[in-house]
Length: 427
Image 1 (cartoon, helix red, strand yellow):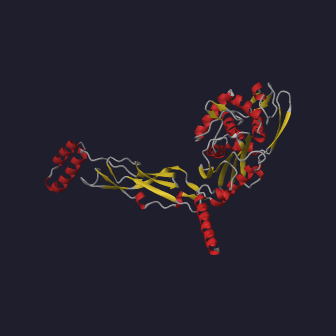
Image 2 (cartoon, rainbow, N blue to C red):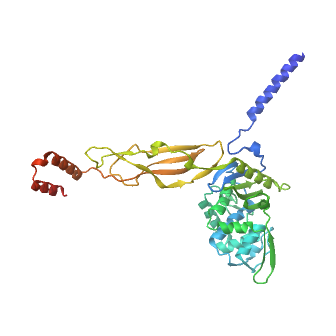
Image 3 (spheres, rainbow, N blue to C red):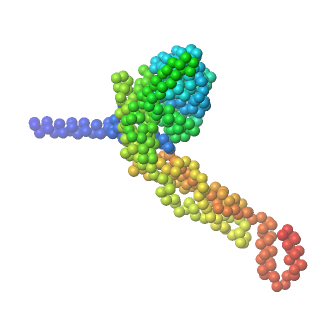
């Protein structure tokens, strides 16, 4: 009886083990969630230099983004206005809910002071005052934000407000994805012509300023705790609304690696610190698992630069096939290298024509070499001809016939005959 009971227990334990194995989530190369244990509903770790996503969880899910919106508000302002401009406050801007600076209708402020209020304290009224000054209205400024998002490459982002307060417009709502949010921050710190000013403003520890007409004074303190949390922290922006939950986007540069972390719906009160632990986990994952590798380290296929056969070209004799040297074009598309895990490989694809028919121009493209990691191409170099070859035509054929005739009958040909023949050939 005991043996039978023991046998049944063994079978039961085996079944439980099998079911557990079947139900265990698969571990994606980009998203080892069992290791990272993140709180965020949507998260992305991005290589800011290439835009490559190194880790993602629900990276393309469209969600509310709260005050992380303000990084776009700032970069649009920096690229379209003078920070020494004077901004006059409207009644609508003054009516914004907390968190706010407390500006009043008719007051005037230096634009740069309002951008520091925007980023250090996340003031909603400053955001609207800025938007109305730069765009003419909140709606027109939102159009500038959406246009910039498209230019950056965002696919699922829609801006309605400059401060990130929840809003709906028809069938759309103020939203982004973790991937798009990371793309925007990457643009702000690596590609924008105003990247240095963006970093200066977002890294300012504190700022004091006065209203220009009545002299009211204000002080702002930077609440981005990440700046002092990790060595190499560059920039970031927090956000919270009841719909969005806690959100964060931050950047770090260390050992020639630049990472961006974007988090959406990363807890609700009382879980304000979740965003910091998620950010640290993702940044440490990137620093520990990814290193830069240049594509120049990967050997090209020998066939890439082998001579190309050209037919119908003007060679030494009629019908000759000519070997024309091939070289790599000086300019390439894509990136020169990539942050990669040790287990990742570069796949090279060669596309090259087997032969050409004259005429052939110098620098003519005859193929390319593609460098891919995973399923994405990251670099492409073109293969081009090093010289030109003219096509065989009647005039060239007649000359070749004449040359052969001259060789075989030189001993009995007069100078008069040669001149007559040359005139006929147009030499």
